[in-house]
Picture 1: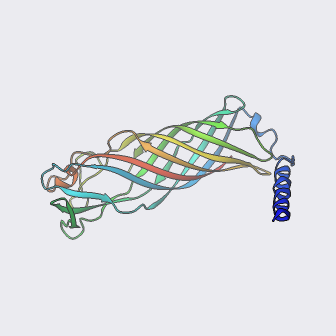
Picture 2: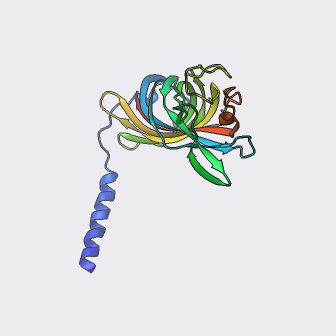
Picture 3: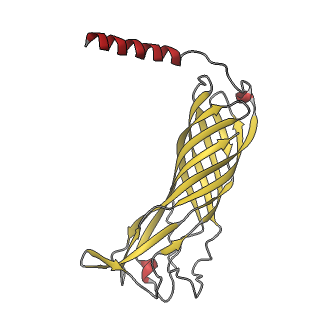
Amino acid sequence: MRKSFLIILVLAFSMALSGQVERPRNLTAFDLKRIHFGFTVGFNAMDVGLTRNYDAENFLYADLSHLLPGFQVSIVSDLRLNKNWNLRFLPGISFGSREIYFYEYSGGEVGEVAAVRDAANPVPLGPSFLDFPLHFKYRSDRVNNYRPYLVGGVNFRYDMSAKKPGKYDSESNEYMKFKRGDIYLEFGFGVDSYLRYFKFAPEIKLAVGLFNIIDPNGRVEHPEFANSISHARSYVLMLNFHFE
């Protein structure tokens, strides 16, 4: 038992020492650049937090049944402020999908899916966002060819696919919609990896919408869909890959 413990202790100590060994560095002058550019590709999952209006006439219980994958692309513009801080502007476009189901609700119980025509459920809400994020990036000291960082800031998103408030196609199965624009708080973390010819950074980020995005102007023939939701807040979880 004591021998095994000593072996484990020696191995752990050896691994700790090897982690401190200085290795050849790639892109040694990269962090001295005042401004640099790049691009981003990534994946997302768009969620919605719903506050239901139980006092609405002909109330229907709204629920986002599952998260659907989407993707985004953007351009990276990075301004070095000092050794550890950078200011980043990443304009781009993101695509996603959200499907809200409505259920009959009676006596405190959620029942069957509500049906209007043949295809009232789910209500598809597939945004195509123009993104205008402005972020501060705090980077730790570089260790060999890696540099962990935190990122946070704001993002204005505009939904290009959304129609004007109160406008519905006569043949569509849209019975409610979200507003076109919203401001998000975004925060996340990642690791800058210095490769031979470029810097690669995987990053996880969460965006939280600040405003109520539900359009109160529901479809005239079926106002119960929009009236059943008093507040909707948008959430976006992103996995990004930066190439700089």
